[in-house]
Length: 322
Image (cartoon, rainbow, N blue to C red):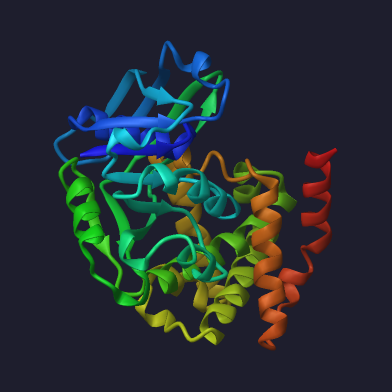
């Protein structure tokens, strides 16, 4: 399957590498002037949790790149692994040259799909939640890839685009977990991230947060408030196991949840790598924080813990802007 990936960032490079090694024709669409930086490929160090694959790959990803699109390329699938605020611009650039392709949007969503639907029929795009992650360290991609990926279409559609995308990932050892209500699933993930990020900001990073029990407790309360916003939107949280550990904030529940998180992040090297970029995008963190806070206020959700982080978020975003 001829595949176009937008950019050469962490997520796009991980999946591009995996697809290329699986025998697929992959091209990365990069911004003008970026190609010369990629002529020697990308040094990579990937922990691989897929069954039947080497547990670690250290080498190069010799990616194929282009700075200009041509309709004659005949791409069958376009993967857009961008921030939520970048998706629409990416689609506007690419759609005129990929009229026959389907799309995989590896991004978050909080505001619904009206803007995307104005550009692309719902039958031609699939949402996905990437499990892979990592960061660039001294130009080397230090990352991890996991054996599952969550996929789905809006309002429960099951078009050929979903079958095509699921089959593609399944063929490279990544099991597709099909979500009947992909937006509800993504909103739950978005809320969890939005609740955890402020505590990470206040603590100064993941390692510091794991040592700071008080701020760690506040992060659990913040996520619980954010999930209440999702519930007010009509999402049944009982359907999503990721939400369970944050639903009960009693002392014992907090201790158990805190212990589970500390064990996960301290001893699971793949999780450590995939979360290394947690504070990499202040704009995304600020946008997600206010998206949950403002929606909560509109829906009448009491969010004292989230509100208490407002100065931290503002200071964090301003420090990067300056």
